[in-house]
Length: 596
Image 1: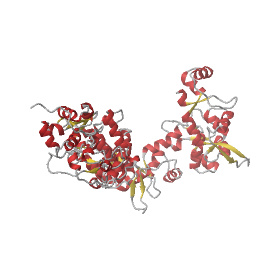
Image 2: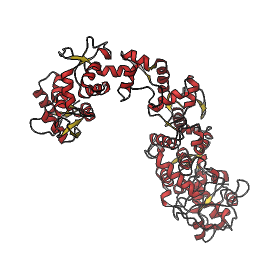
Image 3: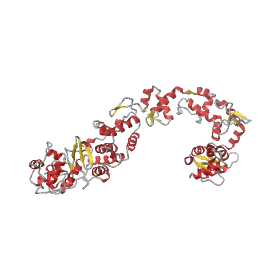
Image 4: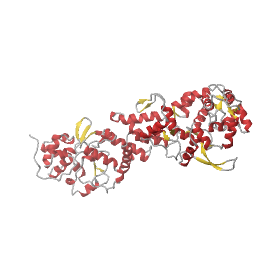
């Protein structure tokens, strides 16, 4: 017998978005058949093809209802390949559907005059769609029947069913559903979630959002529809901005917890456990790879340990315990060094240290290498050519850096830091020599100022120094002009430089220095001069350092290019570079970023 392609005598109103099984069930009841299976039998309609949404079956139901087959096909899930359905303009994996436990809108059921008027929509079969778009209330489970023969017969399922009172859905928590509906209706867009398979995008937003809204201890099986909606919105709010935003949120969660022995599983439990059970679906690889790589690089995972099915290729970061175990180094030395670097801090109890974050392996490697080269105060003094008491004098104000910054820690020094200190002095050595040169220690005795303060004055004011061999000179070999030192001391105030001296250091005229202070480019401080008793403006030494890094004069540019300063100025102005707005007869100065 040929398939039944005639319009049935008794009709029901078709609703856009309704599935073919829903329409067939309502037609069956309207025309006296108790179930859709009976209609299929009478009309020689294949029930399996109907539940799978095949075009032949959908076209036959459309003919019975007198509607366009294309409208009915669009919203009927169509089995197109093993495990995959077509719904609207999306190809969706079966795991995104709930095909054995349907949901319905309680308000739609209340407004329907009977089961023949209670339409069921294709979008409602999606697990992540939990609200009725028309009534903005949460869907409720429909009664279930044994076996699959009547599972899709929604008209039969709602016969005699009394729906509960509707629960209104909050609009602010509908962002994910709006996105999913739009994606089904119009197809994928251009955001990062749009490049993911539909079920991956939907389920990742919800699972990650559950971690964000309810915390790592949340239980998926007890979450309410409202909680799932809030979770989906929170997750989508992050993922829509791409993988970098996803990583940053994972990092934010990590930073919110103190660094201790807590495993990453504890911090991300509900999300991590969900992802771990997706290991049979390669479609989740993009999410799995991202999370795994984040865990490898942000938690102390030992080489070879398995995370989400893959071994860690190398250990990227360490805790105190893993570093001690891996390198066999002293725990208290390691903790004190990390504290000096700002990577650890002493516990509130005063006993022991806690990391501010896991430490990169490169830093631990450097520290382990440093430990082999450390010198005590006596050996460090020999390195610089001074006695132990002089090491203490130079160390106290911080001119020579201790390897362990703690007050009570034994002073230990690294040759790198000793070289840095002596290198600053060697950099000031000039070839010509003054007639009244004394070594720094003797000069400090003559001016009756502690040696460490004299060194500070020399470095701050960039005084010229002298030595027989600048490349090998040690501290006792370096001399300073006594008269120049006395002249600078008369105008020196801690942390500041006299404007005349600042002009000489920077290579400008004094008018330029005053204009730079007036415009705030250089920071000025009011100083009461001991010699004259007057209050005058001095230049902050640190602001001079910052200025040298961020600005350059036209004379410096001309020296580098080999052109005359006037020519260099014209060239830079033609290129659109704007000099600092200083007063008349001030030197021309540019921002380095504008000209280099």
